[in-house]
Length: 294
Image (cartoon, rainbow, N blue to C red; front, side):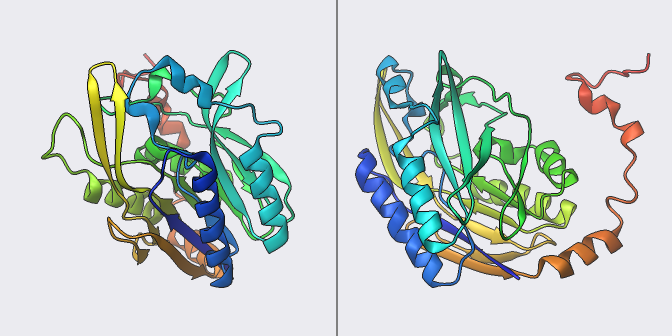
């Protein structure tokens, strides 16, 4: 039996206050019995990718001796919980949207770098982040083997399947998503949720998504850009059903418990991994769907 949690809160643009909020909510999740606790994407500050500004590269830090990671290692060890930690990584002259998974004894289990990098109005991540080079990974924590993708990764079924093929028992997606600055009428919230519910159901695993809330205004080269982040963090069960769900305005600590042995039996009996045909999926290695055998 494993208890998971998704946190949700509004960020300021002050690192120390955001980290304090994250720690307060991690402690609240622990009080509710959580074993694995997910904090939202790039929670140290505003979602700066609304703008292409050279100064924002100063927000990046190397993984080694990163102050927020070290603080979360101490917290994980104190509470005996697992915490995936999102951060803006500097690696020599490369920069990544990255996450480290901290085990319940404070050990850094490894690094994942975001694979799919978006580039559109309000979400100009290609300016800041190199494409991730780690590949999709799973992490054997004290409580479960978990897979972690980051935000835009959550729209790709290939990423979810790759992690579950490697043994992930639960999928986690820290996120920063909200309104679209170029189109006030575009609301992706329900689409966003349904896509990930599909990943849970297609792979017969629970899924945890953590998103921020609040309005953030960033100075850009063309004036001010504004995004209202829609929260709606949620936990889905292994058939894609919603187990716990936050709203679009309030801070939240979501909790759900899963029997991973029971889910494993269901996953095996359902046959979606037994009946796979990898020999027919070579087209997935192409961009244009061309016949790779010709």
